[in-house]
Image (spheres, rainbow, N blue to C red):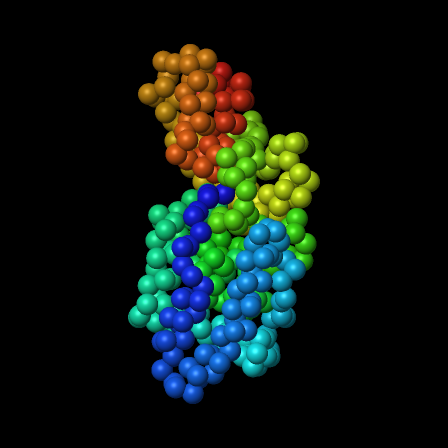
Amino acid sequence: MRKLSRPNIDPNYALAQCIDGVSNALTKSHYIANQPYLQQGFNDFESATSAVNWCDLPRVPNGNKSRVIVGNLTKEQLTKLYSEHMVGSTGAARQIYDDILVAANDKCPFCAGIGHAATLDHYLPKANFPLYSVFPTNLVPCCRDCNTKKLAAFPTSADAQTIHPYFDSEHFFVEKWTCATLIRTEPISINFDICPPPSWATADQKRVASHFKNYDLARRFSVEAATELSILINQRRTIFRGLSAVDFRSTLSEQGCIPSIPINGWRRTLYTALAETSWFSEINF
């Protein structure tokens, strides 16, 4: 929901820095001997990226840490490259982690900036795709809520893949596909949903539906909007009380068009819905 530039980090460099942090000489030589297999895995990932179809990459079930994944490297050995020799490192591998994280400017791309990007998420979960544990373009800055809300298992069909901030087409980030409906209750409530353009391919419409559901955005948007709506209603009673319904509606519409705010984030979606709901501008609060 927020586009990010892909990390300009060679995967072989990232791998080499992780391996360099291994203190045990025998373990380090074991990783080095398997580097050609890891390189092939990176090539496969790039091919899948070109097709925007990662779901067909070979996956493994959860658990069974001793399972051999590639060459003679086990699942545990592959995931330890990330947990111990990247995240747990104090050297160049940790710097790679930090550089990827900082590039998000503290805004989580999956929820359009509701949460602060405090960790890196494996777009392809390392529990099922351990081969890509330290692949830079499989690591995406993420807030803790998004990291825990998304499904643990990666989908098996391309049209169920969530939006990838690095690789997905521009239309996911610049065209409107979220919407909201105001409900005239006491207090006023608002429901968020998706409304992708009819001209989009069916697969793309399904993907935004999957993204919206997997990251629990309907509920999370509503939580954010409730506070904003309360403040706005108070402003209508005070600083905006002299505005006509037409002028107030124009003010709301302007808030729904601020280009520096994600077009499919909760704030622009909220204000667009408010501006399009005539009774909200006309009601006497």
